[in-house]
Length: 245
Ligand code: ADP
Ligand code: MG
Image 1 (spheres, protein in one colour):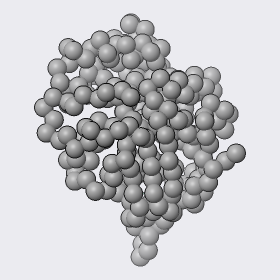
Image 2: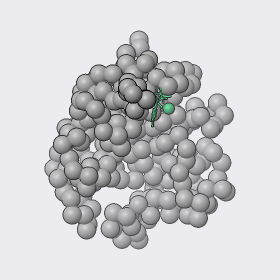
Image 3: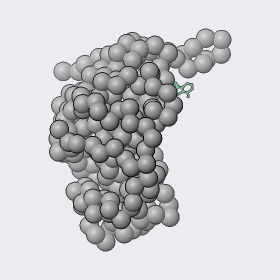
């Protein structure tokens, strides 16, 4: 088990002692307002992802994949059911505690790269360290190691987003998501802006980091050619989850 030091200056330490057991959704149901009624985006979803497991999630547009990730990321609260991160029930936490849980246990890579335009690749990671209240200098070595491990050279690490290719930016996103040593890694369509070959490389990287960092990883993808790298493929249809063989 990787030890996970509590960030200095963090007032919230509720989650610091729980084991890393991954992600579980239990009977998760989510609706959005739709005129007089509600549109059911997630319908009694059951999902368990263990540490080191690379799960792919496929399904037609509008089937609920991004909603599932948003609920798992504790960004949306389900109408019913439980979201457990390392066994901690996110629904039972207050806002501050949930934010701390997210910061300490979750890594999120969204469809759109949301890198800050004025920062170099290394700084994209280090800025999180300032947010955590730690001193950036100490973290620089670790940030550089992580960026190198996702395939970015020293020169590339000093570039700003507009000086990097789409594939390189996605690698920075992945390194940034890993920087807080998350237990759960949630990735939404990481290859949608990439050509096929770069898409394959990014998915191979995700498979590798899932093993080396022991993350419980869920990756949403449209691209069926990329599913071979996953340990498990789940399919979503009309908010319901089924396992594919
Ligand atoms: P996917 O990622 O599989 O394309 P989504 O989770 O984005 O699916 O959407 C599932 C359903 O919920 C769709 O019918 C979509 O239109 C609807 N939906 C998603 N987000 C919202 C929202 N913020 N407000 C209302 N409806 C939404
Ligand atoms: Mg989506």
